Length: 169
Image (cartoon, one colour):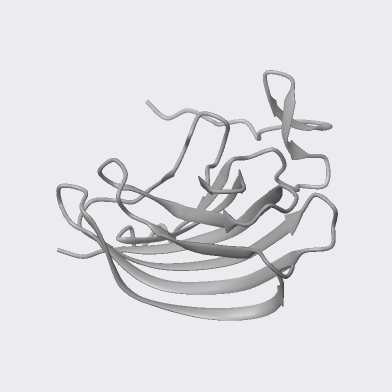
């Protein structure tokens, strides 16, 4: 039996519980990730994440050690912009990582290649800050591991990550 659907009306925006997800100007807000895919080509999608961490850590999506979950049997292009800043604001490191990563059918992740572009290296003298792909965690889980060597101020890490994924069997 046919039915007439009504238009969705959400004056003032759309919220989950009391948190705005879409505001009155059609902006997405307060989302942990955003997945975009073509409805005619279901094998590929792109998803954006924000990861954070401090000093020497594995960067996470949230405070419950959330990593990026890759799909089984996929090839992934992962583009990441990273900023690391110490608590005094004097030390800064910004870079871009562009990686090709595969994930097999049981969740083993392999780095195929990574290009690292250092945008600004303002790490204080006597300290060493670094970031690398982290593929040694639970099956299907991907992130970055950071290191900070030296006795300087606390370093906060921020990463904007875009994962472009396609089924790869």
